[in-house]
Image (cartoon, rainbow, N blue to C red; front, side, top):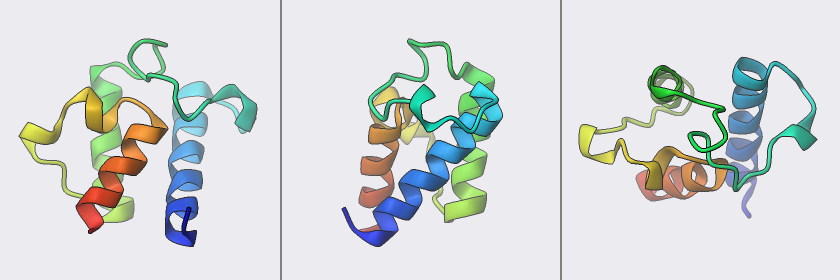
Length: 86
């Protein structure tokens, strides 16, 4: 994993942990955890995540990209970000 990917991973993990799990305990979030299946995020949370991606990483999420394959876990987000930044 590159430094950029590692930084993105930590940024995403911190955002989810602080804003949705209300902790800084890194062990509370597995990168493969589905945000929707585990109840970490609901539809409003997904919109907040999309806003976060735009503000923090300048990643624009198009309507056709708002799918679980892109946004439903840290791993999915990292792959999506890598694709968008390529």
